Every structure is written in structure tokens, then in C-alpha cells.
Length: 145
Image 1 (cartoon, rainbow, N blue to C red):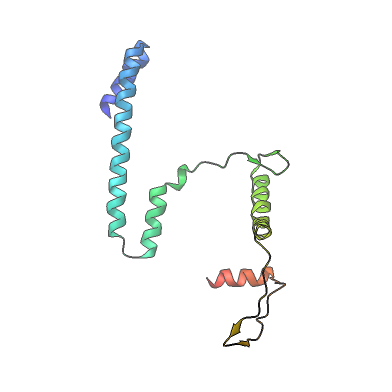
Image 2 (image 1 turned 45 degrees about the vertical axis):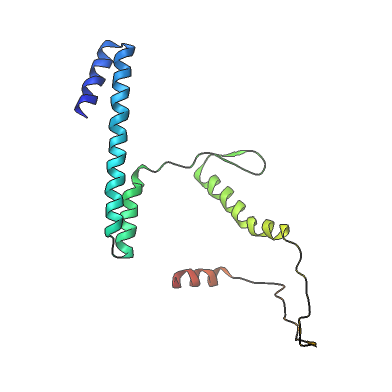
């Protein structure tokens, strides 16, 4: 790392392409070594984890939540871009709120058959045609998780 810094100072002072090339070569090797060391450290640490709390704490440390990038612009269905966080959240919500319906429309319609066992028709199994779900019920179930 010291060599990298020294080469950087030389490259800045001289502004010569050879100095910049030498600096970039050392910079890349130092970055590569740091990434390998970090990966090795966390691989070892994940092998030593004993419970879920420790596991998730380690995941948070490994993913470095302080350096997470913001979400870039999101294209809406009308081809405009959502730039504000609230607009992005609304666009994502509208997409995921309709994905189930769109996937359902791709499936073939259900076929109702009367199962037969030993020559006798079995009772028809009722199908669920409507399903009502309240926000309160969902919140309660999520809280119970």
C-alpha cells in the first residue's frame, strides 16, 4: 500500500504516462489482494458461525450496508422515468402488485374433471373462485412470523 501511495505521488508530480501505468498496475494488484483477503476472512468467519443472529450480523458486516448504492431511475410502464425515491417505490409496487395477475393470465384455465376410482365417480372437489384478504390479516400474519 505504501508503494501504491508513493507511485501515486510520483504520477501526480510527473504527469507522465509511464508513471501512471506503474501506479495503476500496483493499485490493481493491491485491490486484488485486499479483495482476496476479505473473501478469505469472511469465508473463515462464516464457517465458525453457530447461530442465526451471528450469521445475520456477519452478513451485514460482509455486505457493508454503509456503502450501498442508491437505486437508479426506474422506467415506468408509460416509458417515463421515476427519479424520486417515492416515485421509484410506487413504480416497483405497481409492478409487483400486478405480477401475480399477469402470471395467472399466462396459465391455461383450470380444467374441472370428475375423478373416477374403481368405476365410481368421486365427489367433486370444490374450487376456490374468490379469495378475500384484508390488510389487517396480512399484518397479523407477518407479525406472527
